[in-house]
Every structure is written in C-alpha cells, then in structure tokens.
Length: 138
Image (cartoon, rainbow, N blue to C red; front, top):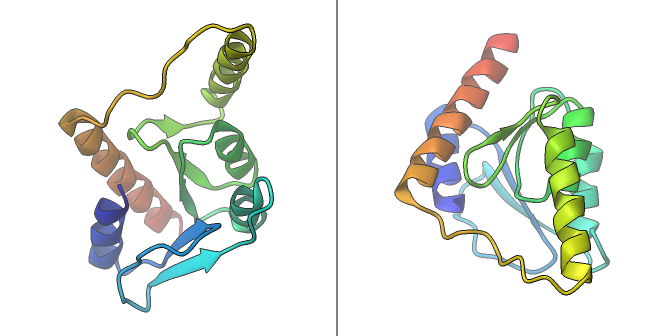
C-alpha cells in the first residue's frame, strides 16, 4: 500500500514517515522520509506511537500499535482499509489475543488473506476520508 500512500500524500502535499528497522526504497521527495530505527523488539512501533497524535494518520496492520495510536489521538487505518476506532479496537485486541492463544496451543490459524482490488479501493477511500476529516479539524 506504500505506493498508494505516496500518491495520495503527494496530491494533498502531506508528509509521510516510513518507519522501519532496515533501509527501504522511498521515493525521492522531501515530503517522504525514511526513519530507520534499531532492530530491538517493537522499536518501529515505539517510534510511531511516541510521535502519533491528533492530526496524524497511522497506517498499520499491527493491532497493539493501532491501539496505542488511537489512545494518542491519531486516526488509524488498517492495511486493508478498515479504520480502527475507539469502538472497534477492543474487539480487534480480543481477537488478536484469541488467535495468539490458539496458535500457542498448536492450531493453524493461517496468515492474512492476499490483498484484493476491493481491499485496495477500501483502503484508498478510508485514507481519503481520514485526510479530509483531519483537514477539516485544522
């Protein structure tokens, strides 16, 4: 989804931070910044959560990071375009815990489904909606 994020950010002239524990290819644009953190556990998530707040949009599939970002006041969108909200994050956290327990007991739960065109469309719509909402609040 990074390419879609870059295109939307360019259209709205927004800054994008890509946070990783390794170097990634980021378009050469002053509004796109790669932040490389150390490789300690949750270093990238901690960097994001410590800086996220009102007026920011966090895109993540990581549910604990989504929870932390929401609590800090940021808008959060899952990688499939489903926004995390204060009303939905509790169920997402509970589901994550349940699946973790099932995996610990040996159940095969599988990974995420491949990204579909519908997911991509939903993501772009949710991102645009979050940007519009954030811009109205300024």
